Structure formats: C-alpha cells, structure tokens
Image (cartoon, rainbow, N blue to C red; front, side):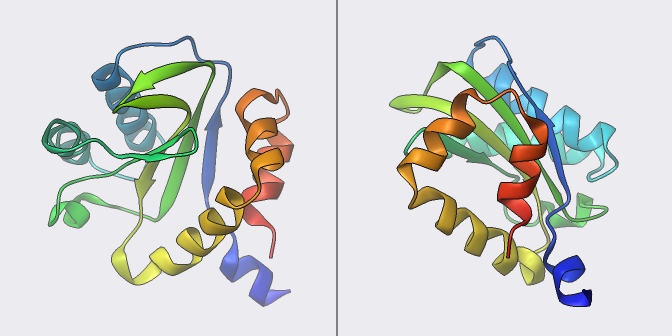
Length: 145
C-alpha cells in the first residue's frame, strides 16, 4: 500500500477546454498550478518565457509546459495539471489535445516521466484521453502502477 501512495502523481485535470492560442494555454496551465498551491506565481512567468524560447510540444498530441532552468525554487510541491483540448490546439508545429503543466522537482521527476512514457506508447489510450469526459479515467491512467 505504501508503494502505491508513494508513486501516485498529484494531478489536477481540466477537461473540455476551448482552443486558445499557445501562450494563453501555457498561462492557463501555470495559473492552475499556482491556484492549486503547486507553484508560486513567478513560476508561471517562467513557463511563458520557456515557451517563447522553444516549443514544449513533444508530439503525439501532447505538450509538456514547464519553467526555465532554475525555476524549481518556485515549486512548492510536486504535481501536474492536464488541460484537455478535445478540438485540438495548434501548437509548436502540431496539434495538441493534452497540455501538461509540470511542477516537479528534478529529484522526483522519474515517477512522472516513467508513467508518461507508458502512456505515449499506447495510441488507443492517448486517443481516449484526448476526448474522454471521465476525470476518474485520467486519474487512474496517471496513477496506475
């Protein structure tokens, strides 16, 4: 039981968001992280600066927005937010359906990236995440062992 609790990803999910421009989407993710107590407001500005420097689009319909190097000092606790754009968002040369805002200290990122790697390998699962209206499904996917 303790292992499962330790590996759980603290995740906030925002579904069915209408398409917006890139910077508005990143700001929205950052503001959700700040409102959830994951980051200080300075981290949001760092996320926007990071996006202006280089797109955080990773392919397969996903972008992972995060702060600039050194911005981890503004992270209050580890967690992520997932913004779902069912109609897609033109983003960094591709269409994004899930924008993930990261607030993860470097020493804790292995759990999240391991889970994300598993998710990215499953195209059927990804397609379901892009359009589902079931928050429990999101939580289950990101917190499964």
